[in-house]
Picture 1: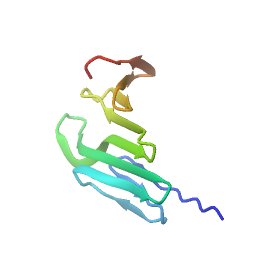
Picture 2: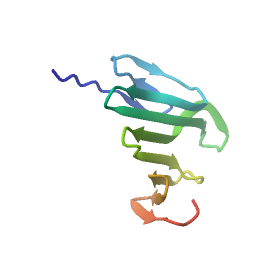
Picture 3: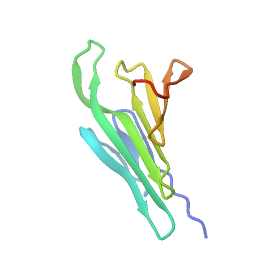
Length: 114
């Protein structure tokens, strides 16, 4: 028998958990969102939050997701984070391949500064 559980998260972090609960969490820092360890599967998902900016440029009390990192049982890894200007994302695959995404454009940044 196969069981499928779906969890989601978005915004200034709102969550729908794997057990169907809903909540909002405005913690600031790095958190483990999912950690699965079985005899044949390991999966780890971590997220970082930071304070959101208001339209006037001041910091709000709300937080937003600013980065995610994932690793599995084969030691494959992926890291996605907002760029400094908050205009796009930086993607790191296997700790050494960089891509920068801004406004519908991916740029390969291997061997360059992020």
